[in-house]
Image 1 (cartoon, helix red, strand yellow):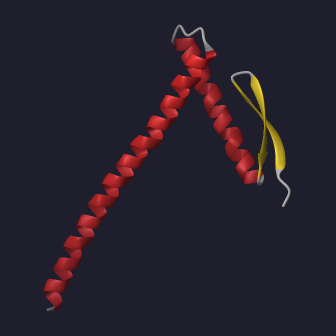
Image 2: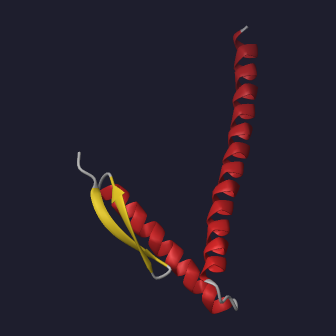
Image 3: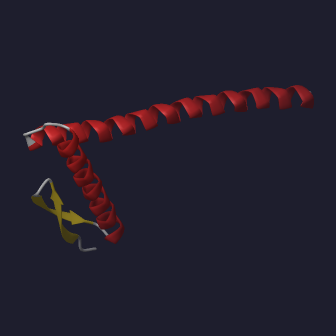
Length: 96
């Protein structure tokens, strides 16, 4: 299957990319749009003169959101596993 060639603009720079399908293209475009909105927000709210600083702040925000979501998921999974163990013990005790 041929890859699709697209151009993504982030912080005023164009990046040529190859994607596997239109769904991946849509994801890339949405991600670029989210980054550009965040860049604009940082530039409006903070006295940042260097784009690299703004991009680093964006990267930190996106990465921290992913890590927090991962930690919350792990916590939820741990709680669910504990509940399943309790239920299994309860069912076992009634079956014996």
